[in-house]
Image (cartoon, rainbow, N blue to C red; front, side, top):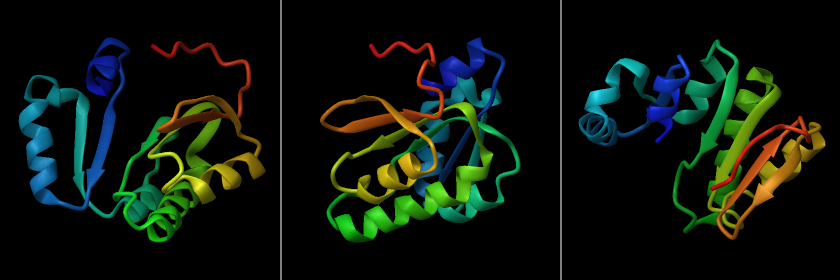
Length: 136
């Protein structure tokens, strides 16, 4: 879905997973859109700290929520590593609300982000409270 979006909007999707097996699976499933995707086998915290571009949409879904304390700390480090790459209109989508978003939401709110929309499972935030988006 994200690859289709960047294809239609002249963008590029960067994806990162610590597992080469998972990246290879992603390559297989997105083969037709691979020219719009930059696949990376890397720890997400390191990847985001070293990422040099501005981020329009940051979707975080690392780890499972089985260990909420560890997963929340990991997601917080991902946010800290990417905060300087986010701009006024950036969207941040956090998955697994309530298990790994606990620290990240507070951190983002303390850094002038606002919750635009939330469900039982995800939270969407931006600095721009008036951003034009559609949630379907």
